Length: 146
Length: 146
DNA sequence: CCAACAAACGCAACAATGTTGCATTTACGT
DNA sequence: ACGTAAATGCAACATTGTTGCGTTTGTTGG
Image (cartoon, rainbow over all chains, first blue to last red; front, side):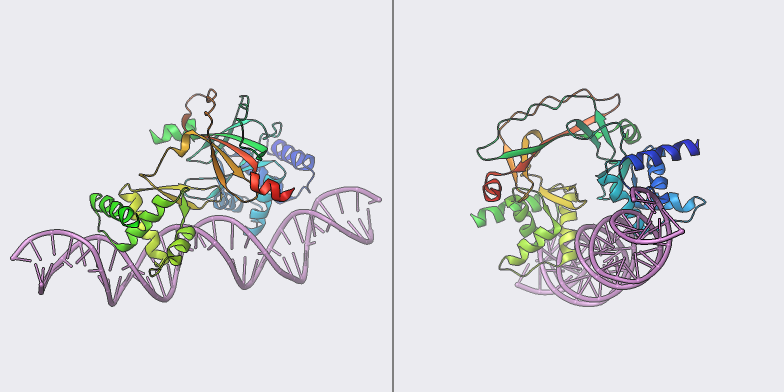
């Protein structure tokens, strides 16, 4: 099962057009295995406790950035102002659809809904992108809060 | 007019049951005058450029915390993970309308448009806020770019 | 108005998180 | 296998926020 996951992450990374390194595979595996978005520190801990050699702090930051840049991971901010990362579903493109962002864990969930039509803009304004983001508590955090 | 605002802030602070200090009044005035939530750095700059003596960094943090603690200010996190503060009184429901964010100058413009109805959420999710953000170039930046 | 006390302030140092520069190592197409 | 661009590791730095502590200030009771 570890082999399966590893192979899958490897394929995803290769398909994204970036180099397949052990660090990227390990981080993407960890993100895929996590049920909640992870922050840098949690990932560092998790990777250090594994058998393999631990990743450098800065390298981990750069790996996360690269995964976000090539669309394999999502970056969000939790209520304490800390960046949290989650694995993006590879088959989805995160443009032009609706997101739900949990304000507690920072998780991003893609909703199956149409983007609403944009309203009229003031004269001279040029529209390039539409973000329709719903914010609140996800099922897990909502349960824990109650 | 400045006196009116100052008196109002003073009253609010006194009514909140905490000491009325020059720092608290100045900060609450600044928050009330701001059209957008301000971060610590912006407030520090703004207060330093005024005639009066500038506030200590730590004092500003503590003033903001105290204003939040007594309900006069609201604390939130922006997309970069920085805390932003707004006056609780001046909270004219920035939540329920549409914003246009200029990707060049960073300006935020409130549009007079209805929020589209939210789509159905997965079971257990609690909706708290809807952000319908349009991004692109504002009239000024668009003209300059062309 | 004055004194006393708790709250608020200023300063210094610290802590957590994230970034940049640069030399070395590694993945991968040829 | 080799060359090259990308990725890594290390050190130093930057930004944002917090804690400890001695001093000043706002408020309250006489």
